[in-house]
Structure formats: structure tokens, C-alpha cells
Image (cartoon, rainbow, N blue to C red; front, side):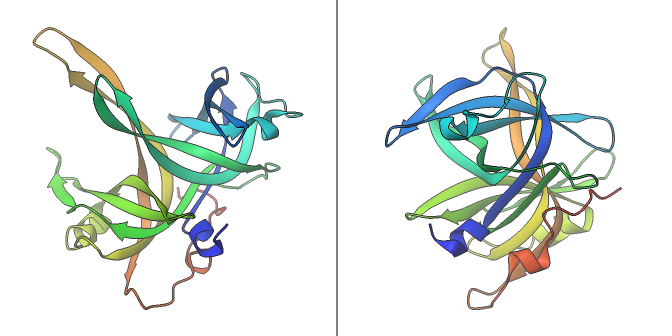
Length: 224
């Protein structure tokens, strides 16, 4: 495993398992399973996040509905064919189960990657500034994960000036968000989107040395 690519994408989550594990895929004879975890915010709302775990981690662990999970890993993307169209899917890929610690942020992510689509800046009807960006994060074996991110306020104003190819690092949390998708004049379905809500953000040159671990604390308590 490439150490640098490992540091580009780091996640910690702590929450309650809210669905049964279902088989996802197999790689070199190792099976992977997916379930959903409810992670609470300070506001009392919850994010329901997809989590992928190896059968080797599940064995001997009490990962059942109603139990809690404390894990570190990566936020990964993959393409899934639905209705003849490719859809970007996202999941928290667990690399290690760890002990929960009091005061630790239950939902933290740090990423380092490249802007791969022009950011979209907008304001809400209540004049709240928002910017969307898609970040390509390098992974080992010449793979990349494509992570949707959303910035607010002064971070949104900063993001609107970024260009495709710019290198950035950020910290934040993974959030789930429901939205309505119209399939026809009469059919509307409720979908769930997953994205990184940015709390801190920095841009740096390609040749510039930047240590994500030094800049962002994955385990810091959540901001009030």
C-alpha cells in the first residue's frame, strides 16, 4: 500500500448499526459486506452512512443491528449500473475497528486531492453561500475516488475561485441528504446523496510539501 495515498483519504466514524449486513462484492476470495450506520450530529440530527466491511473484520466482532461501531478507513467511490446508466456510489470503507474514545469526533474526514470539475457557487433564498466541488483523491494501484464536497460561507467564496486541476486539502464530516428525483410527470422518488461538508480547507501548489495529518486532526472534537 502506498503510504502517501493512504494519507490522502482518512475517515473516522462512530455510530449505531441500523441495517443488516448484505453481501457487496468479493476481491481475491475476500468477501465484503455493506450496512448502514447512524452517526449523530451535535444538532441532534443524524447522518445515515453506508459502510463496507471485510468478512475478516466481521468475524469475531459483534457488528449487528443496534450495536455500535468505531472504525477508521477511507471514503471511497465506485460506479454502479442502474437502469442502463452509471451512478456514482459512495461508501465508508473500513480498514480497522478501533476502541471508541470519549470526546472524539464521531464523524471526521480528511482529504487531499484535485479539483476535477469546475466548482459551482450559489446562494440560497436566505442568502447563505454554498459551493459544490468534486474532488479526485488518489488511491493505491493508480485508482482514484471521486468525492462530492460542499462548502459554506467564506469557504464557499474561496472554493468559487478554484480551478480544475488545483490541489486542495480539507477536513470535515460525511453527511447524508435526502432529495426528490422526478422520474416522470407522475413518478417521484426519494434519493439519498452523500457528500463531505467542509469545515477547513487549504489549497497548495503541486510541488509544495503539505502534511494532512499535521494540518487537520481527524479525531478532534466536533465544532460547536
